[in-house]
Length: 170
Image 1: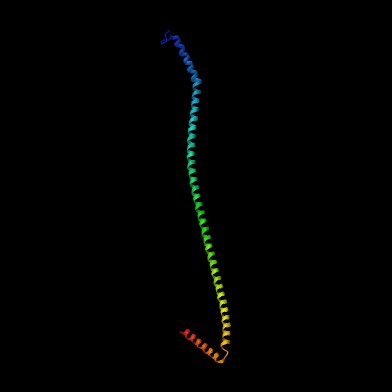
Image 2: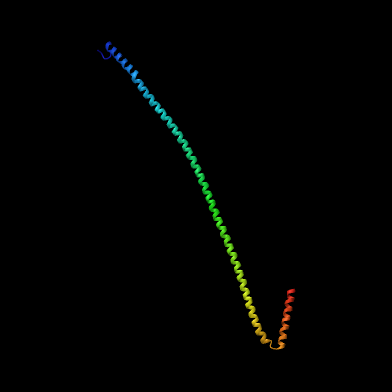
């Protein structure tokens, strides 16, 4: 027997055994293997489809997240702007109120100072008048002890009064 040329009986039995093994594999082995490969393929296809859907959802979520962040930033800017405006309004109102209060206090102080000034001047005038009357009384009693002196004083006063009237008319 040669390795390159087998006997015909051996060749027959090899072909029969090959056909039986092929038949058994075709009947029970290949369908199981094929179904397992098909199941695996469908599982991989389903996984790829789910991965694509997940990627699409993630892209949509990322876009939604970016939109929400942009809205939040816009809202934050709006709130900060409103807060700054409110702060500026409060500061302006406080400054205006302080200015009004200061002006009011200043006006009251000026009025009070003017009233006190008028009061002091009035009091000073009355004291000067009282002193003048007292001094005049003493001077007149001393100087006007005689009739001649009294007539002389009356003449001087009439002249002064007439000079004052003439100067007022001019």
